[in-house]
Image 1: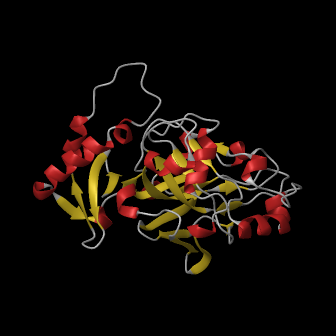
Image 2: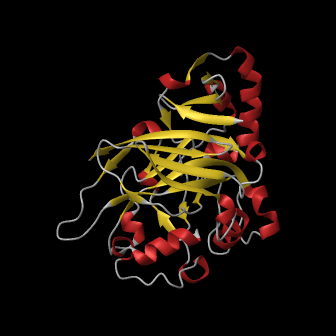
Length: 293
């Protein structure tokens, strides 16, 4: 099933073949009422099986609208954490080591997740494709640029810590396309990558059972008409199960947590007026407009 959030926090089921969205917002009535303090996880993802079942019952009578006419929001509204996997494709690590505007004095020769660990983006950076990317100006006196990074995103479906690799995919609810937008520079990654709108997620959530094996899907990105990134997740250094195992050895994973799995080679700068088109096999296509803040 392909679930989206659209408009004024509506819930939809996407039919890419028909290019329609069916409004199944009434399925959200199965969610339990909450009082302060609110949970530190995403309520819909925590109850996704019940939501899906309710959505299926509503589908035959649901109002359908053209996909082109809805404003798509991030399919996960309230992730507790946005975890990112740095340098998780060998070709990106190689380009980072060679490009001074990427390296900024850091030694990427022996860069790997086991040595460097993972990083975080602030949840306030999260937006959907319709909201676009709002670029921040380069910092005065520093050689900064704003780059696109296309990534498969795994959405955690249930709480877990110390998860074994062989059990890891049981903890994944689904997958999305992600753009880990990055301001280049010598600053800490959590600073440069947590700017408002720099965590794009969409265009919808594809449930794990529908996507199947996340470690064998094609991914590609264009800026305007220029092809920039093209790879397959089989080239991940740490595949999705290993990322879940590694992340959960340090963090308790909660429903709705997002794991941006890393970007392949071909990252590059974008400017106001650019259009970023991303595709991931089994998920679909996401179009994001770039503007100045």
